[in-house]
Length: 313
Image (cartoon, rainbow, N blue to C red; front, side, top):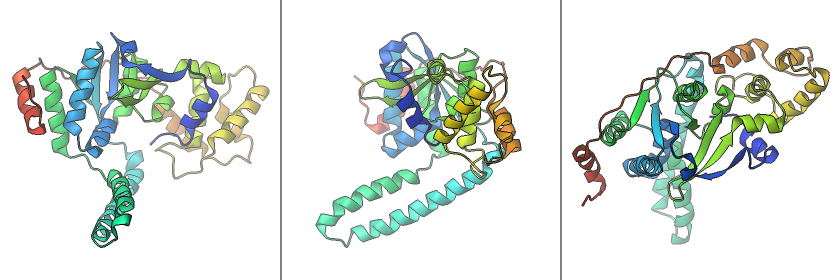
């Protein structure tokens, strides 16, 4: 999920004016669209789905932030092989977890802590979101009067579209694919304890890297996305180095980077796949999204949260 090495490259080459830790109070009055599945996985992994989701909702409300939660729809056909591989990886992790758990009962006490840590890491690798998990979270959102929307396809595309079309101010997601879509503001690594996020200003990043979005998108796709992992990909740092040469050869910047690379046979990449994936990430749809929203219902919210140890006075 995301572009290999992209985050490290950005952190190494951009200032804290473009990427930095921000307190949530900085975003008062803003509408933030959220790639929900990422947080479902995280919260289920902590065995606190409803507790953390309620904490997230109330934290946004406390700081005057309007959240819109986007749920995944049907994944595109292009992702079929990747999803199959992820399924197999989860099965393998689960099998290893079960075998190690049996071993835990027979090892010496001084080995148990180390195995317990490994078990926890393995468990995180085969977490599955059930339909009932999604239904419970939606019920909580409805009872809190929070907006949500079921995407037709993947949520990240819808999140980026809403920001690009100015229906939301920023997107909250740990998926680096948000930059390939051209999402102008991205929040990552939310801390529900410290009420902070790492905020990425995409326009600031492009200025600091001295690169146009169309070229940046090409470089990220060449470095590998979920839609072209099976074909030849190139190291991000290598591509940025080649791009600097491209800028010297094509100072006006009108030409596409892929066209320049195509003329150099030493660069192995599938031109047709690059063009197809580029178009997939290029958002042109301007239609407005109408999220689901209900009036807050305190009694319903109390009923939903009571099984999780919440006490309301």
